Image 1: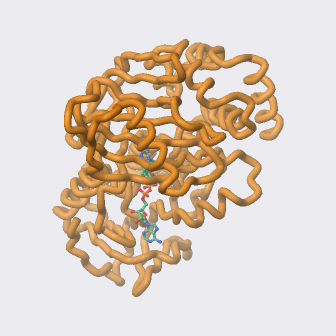
Image 2 (image 1 turned 90 degrees about the vertical axis):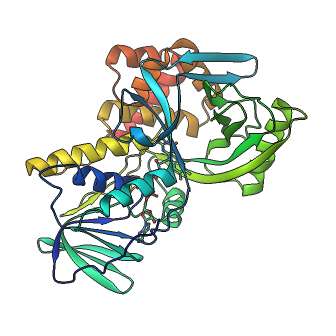
Image 3 (image 1 turned 30 degrees about the vertical axis):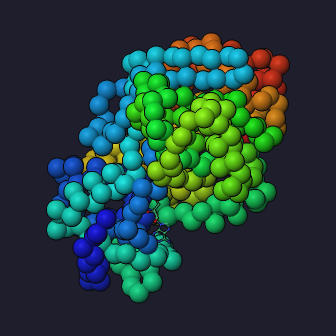
Length: 396
Ligand SMILES: Cc1cc2nc3c(=O)[nH]c(=O)nc-3n(C[C@H](O)[C@H](O)[C@H](O)COP(=O)(O)OP(=O)(O)OC[C@H]3O[C@@H](n4cnc5c(N)ncnc54)[C@H](O)[C@@H]3O)c2cc1C
């Protein structure tokens, strides 16, 4: 995306500086510009690069229409999970499982924001965000600016790897994956069904599955995904995808149209806290769900919460996960981390015994106690209970 980069006005103290224009930064920018009482605030957006590529595909479930409904490129009303001879297909109703391409999102929000003269842009690498009296200074290669409030999502992947290897009190796993957008010469997919987890793949002593999202009968995003402590080499993911395609679609030809690779932290460990007038958002602001790696909808929730607080002029709280669901996340992670039960067995049991509605509510942190108990009862008590006690004891 070509952004008309203007130098930050060094004289202005911006009302808001957005440090990092990825999913969280741009979602916040869009929400602020859509708020009648906030849209005329002076805003500076700083990112190391506005040359955004289609670096990720976001999928999430939603009831009804969302803020970025116009960007949804595909949606499914059926999801499935597979483990050996076990297969289940669930109707997602009242939710719909949706997909947005990263590139469409970046282009849309940046084009929209370019229509606002009060939004300034700087393309440079930030090396300091610091509270100074009642303001925050943001310094980048070649300049700086002051803001009354700064919302930061800058978290370098290298820093995350260092955190993951340090001696943490909470388990830390990666959800890591490589995916290919492939197109077959002939129809092979059921485009109505998103295959969320197919555990019939090499487990690599982790929780591993193929994630298959058909866009048409011929085209799908196929991702080899693992929950584990160590990341694989790019060729290891590719070997698994190739072998999966060979087994599932023997003698069929396909082309690779695009690829994506990623690693999402799965942990209850927080990476940063709000300090003074610096507020952390997105992955940095712990918006990722620890037990699943899903973040897109939690980022939208976080943004909505922040905008409402800005409108009311009240204290900003960026926390999106409630204590009860954070506890469940910690227990599930503990079980996975200590290999008390195979991840494939945990997910199989949850999907076998519950409706997609209950599961999605549980994973969105919106389930009630009765629904939570239903999910927890899907797991053997002799595994779940001691893990829950361990997590509780560690917290107390
Ligand atoms: C490949 C991939 C696929 C994913 N798919 C899903 C999915 O399907 N569903 C889901 O819910 N979640 C998914 N996630 C998880 C999560 O939604 C994304 O990681 C999301 O992009 C996190 O948003 P963020 O704003 O915190 O980080 P980012 O989107 O990574 O944004 C951070 C921004 O900060 C900038 N930046 C970093 N350092 C600096 C610096 N020093 N100076 C200036 N700028 C800097 C970067 O350029 C970037 O634009 C996925 C993640 C990945 C990596």
